[in-house]
Length: 205
Image (cartoon, rainbow, N blue to C red):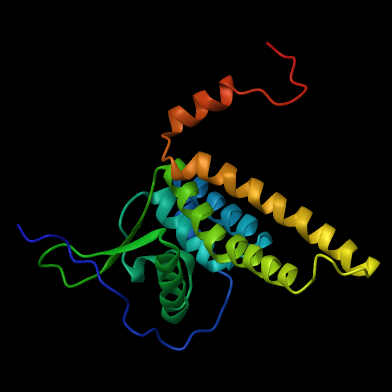
């Protein structure tokens, strides 16, 4: 049996960013209304974190429906252009949270996402760390290398102290990240670890 085909995107049409709005007709059912509410809320939350709202809403649509969707179905549900859909699907694939999928003998591509919430969050955290935290930590290290440790200037030493403290916090975050995600704990294992752990000052049962 020939395996499903997964490949890259065709070049997208000219892209103009517009906010996605789920097609009103879908909200006539209780399920459709719940899906639309989640799509809008996921987009709102993501945009407050600096993530493209339409990209987040496409991801939310694939997540709440839990089924592969063609680009035309995504366009119709969110009322967005083909260029908008193509550009954001490409970005979601770069993030590793959406995959293009084609059944053998089918000429149409469909798009799917991870529907396990824990695995979905892991992928998002990993990508944000790679794109944002790691480059920032490297930049801070480079800045520190330009500030001599033995420089008698008080302002220089003050800046070194602040940047070193910030880098230590990044290092702590990296340790936590590796403990949670690099070890590939299952959600149940992570939940049990959290239940059995204690924070400083925690005197509860």
